[in-house]
Image 1 (cartoon, rainbow, N blue to C red):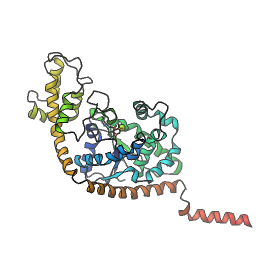
Image 2 (cartoon, helix red, strand yellow):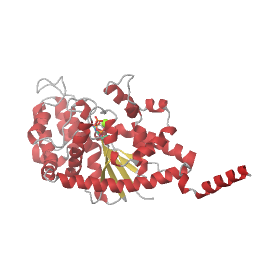
Image 3 (cartoon, rainbow, N blue to C red):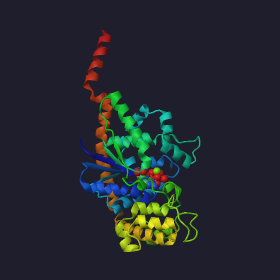
Image 4 (cartoon, rainbow, N blue to C red):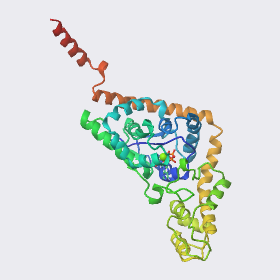
Length: 364
Ligand code: ATP
Ligand code: MG
């Protein structure tokens, strides 16, 4: 069986380092591994509209931002097909049929949807489109017969829901769709990177992000004002690592070689952590170290972005081509889905003949 990747992001803002460690960095590695037959990377504008219906301009503006982030991180249009969700109407059509295979109760049980409903303060006024976005995501994944979906941990309930839809569809209408696997980061801290404020998840909606496109100065300011251990007041105080975002980011980004370059007092992160916990290591020193690492990681991305920003029409052209390829692929699956559901009336000569015979008999 072919190995196919589908994944994507909502164009609700620029991408941040949570996206980077949670999914984007891995996508680039998978792309360059040569192990995948097809790779589809989707800018999920239709999904973003489910909770931004009153602000389509925000989505419109951010499509190019996300595309710039993708390309500057190393996604290569020669190897990965970049496309925009709404430009592939077959996805909407698939979603409509899958809706019959999912109950309202099941949607409301989805833990990620639950948290997001709370976060957005919808109360009882949940837009139907928002509630059903896991179904739309199942359409996106299955339209490309994706086997692998590299995502952050928050997406696991979506993949589970998609797998249920696939099983229900195949059971009801015969084997047609492929059950995907989620691929979450091997490094636990990368599954859900916290915000600079120490909140559980870095998220555009929470405004606690370090963006891939932030300038050197902005990154430094954000790092230097990050949440650490509120009880670590004097340098000599013992510090706690629990919920300490600076150390979580070090867990996500730091390698031993960084100590040689930027902080030779320690051989590795364990030594630094031990000193912090004992007392005698100040937050400023740790933050300066983290800043050096972040700058090293982000500088090449920033430089590529600056170049790409001079090629906007070409990038729209890349997306347009990507949409054409994605559309052709999704159309094939939609045809198969409709045939399996027996709603392909005009392609079914047998049906037309049988109906003709039935009515001919009636006349006699
Ligand atoms: P929004 O607030 O609009 O939902 P978001 O910041 O949650 O934005 P998404 O576009 O929903 O970002 O997520 C895109 C991908 O990035 C998903 O695979 C998601 O799991 C991953 N991701 C997002 N935030 C993080 C994070 N803080 N840590 C790890 N992965 C993340
Ligand atoms: Mg999200």
